[in-house]
Image (cartoon, rainbow, N blue to C red; front, side, top):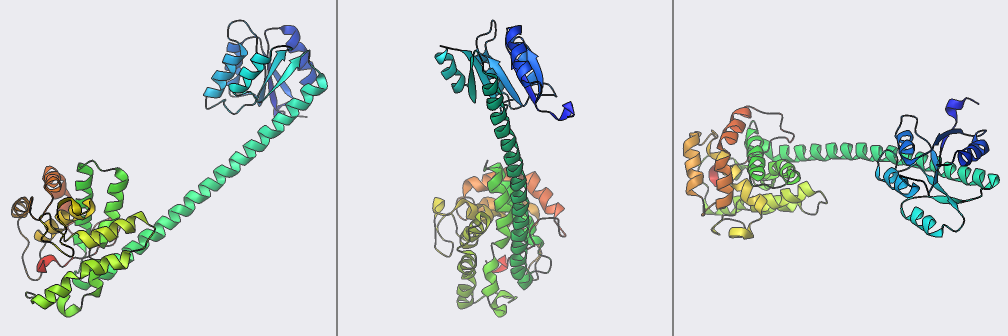
Length: 364
């Protein structure tokens, strides 16, 4: 048999005689390495040619077997190597301590050759089985991760298409939702929300006006001022959007549902559809409200020219504490440079992951 293909057993004992006996028992079936002290045992275990199993004497001068085992089990590279303690009769306390630090078995001196062979074979077989199982688990984990990525891709594709369904109702380019979604993410990040929440809000915000799918064209596309009855119908898009998005297990869709329902609520309680006030409005709705209005103000529409940036910032400031959450406005203003960078970057389309969804805020 090619020695390079044999499993390696490390025998650790401060007695050369004990090492000789154990090595003689195992040498025909395994490649045997030896160490006369704990330090040498650790060095061999951490080498490129590491052992598959260790026979370890407990009572040794200097670093004893218990400490060697403890260090091996605390190291990621060596913690899975099975360790069998070799003890003298009457060392029951040492045996118990050995199990507590991670040993898998023990052999009592004077040793029985048949017992040594049987114990070593059993634990090497278990070790190999565990390695195969871990490899299979790793493979399955990778497959699940890939499946998750495919599912995520399919989910984001659904978001893109859902957003697109509303986008083409009242906006030719859809740049609005690209910018406002990035504005919302910048605000959330400035307010120290988790990166996970920031990312989900970035994906959820494009669906804020998906309910406009249910608004008749004669109202949605009307160039002039809406009548009271038309405005009442227009306001229903918030609840329509939430209804479209409700019931999903996806965190992103759940946030999108909240955004769709609440981004037209106002801090002072005069918004719609439920006239929520202050902290009654979920934070995602409060954040998107600022991002949505700012982009509507700075965007040219058939019924109005784009406001200059400074005028739009001024209108946001005027709405602080009335239309908008003061903390959200403060975060927005502190990110002014980033907001303007986003505005410039996404002026004519972008690489934003979600397809654009337009909002008709001219009638707000």
